[in-house]
Image (cartoon, rainbow, N blue to C red; front, side, top):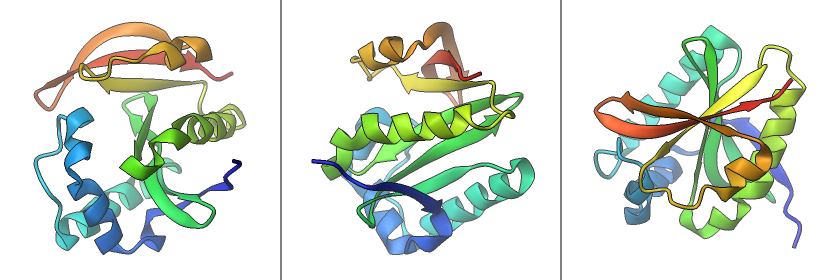
Length: 157
């Protein structure tokens, strides 16, 4: 079944919806930096931080909608001189990852400011075949806020 995937600003999503999403127990499995359930205040602060990235860098994370329904968040965030791609889908939308990523990477390829993207994946992520099929290559392990991630790079130019 085809789903109409759209990207919009996180400010269009009710903070309660973000808080419920990030409080799902399954989210913590692959998010080592997630400290626990989110409150409405946590969601508001998260959106403010992501909006600051948009103001500073001209890009940031989006709310992701499928057929008009919120299914997660993700996008490109500048980390130093690199654009890191992140994707956090609701458990009931995990199957949309490929379509969302394909659409986001098409966006990156159309923007000359993004010659490549990086992906930081926690050690808990075992199925990495999709990254290699896209052409991403393993760069190495990096520490971020006390957690270790596997870093991959995909040229978009």
